Length: 252
Image (cartoon, rainbow, N blue to C red):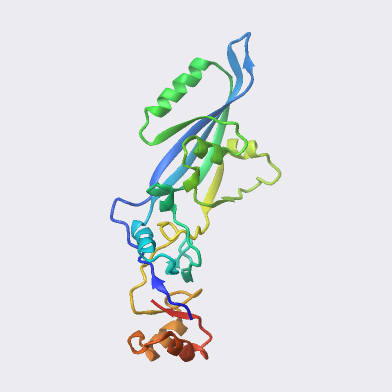
C-alpha cells in the first residue's frame, strides 16, 4: 500500500476559460522569374484553444517532490471520470508557458499566380488582427507541428487525434485540408496534472477513492460508510480492511 497525496485541481476563475486563437501560415510554390510571381501559394488556417494551466497542481508537486499525485481525470466529452494515481507525472508548467494549446481544426486554400505584394498584403492584414497569429512560411509536410515550431509553441501542443470525415478515405492530406471545413481534431488525455482540459474536480482531504474507478463508484461509497478515514491509523490496517472488497483504494 503506497502513501497517496491529493492534488488539488483548482477551479478556474470566471473569464479564465479556454481562449480561442487562430494561426495562419503560407506555403509558396515555384517562383516564376519571367512573371515575378509564385505559381501557387497555399494559405493554412489552424484554429486552436489555449487552456490555462492549473498552477496550484504544479506548486503542489514542487512542495511534495517524489510523491505520487492522486487526481480525477476526465475526457473532453465528460462521458466519464476516474481516479488515477500518476506514477511519474509531467507538467506543462515546466515549459515556462501558462497554457497548453489544443488544435481544433486545420483548413487550407490554394491560390495561383501570387505576387510578393499579395503575400505582404495578406501578412499585414493577418498581423493587424488581435486574435490571429501569422506563423510565416512552412514546408507543408507536417502543418500543425511546423506552425507551432515557428511560434515556438510546439512544446505545449496537447495530444489530439483526427476526427475522420465522411468520404475522406483515400484522399491526400492536401485534399483533406482544402475541401469543405478542413480537418477536425479532438484532444486525448495528456496525463499532465496541471492541464485544465484533462483534470477537474478537486479531491477533498480524508476521503476514500478507488484508483481506476469513478469517484462516485457505488462500491467506494459503500466502503466509505463502513470505514471512515479518521478511524484508520496505518496503511497496513487499510490494506487488511479492503483485501476482500476487490478494490484498490487509497485515502487522500
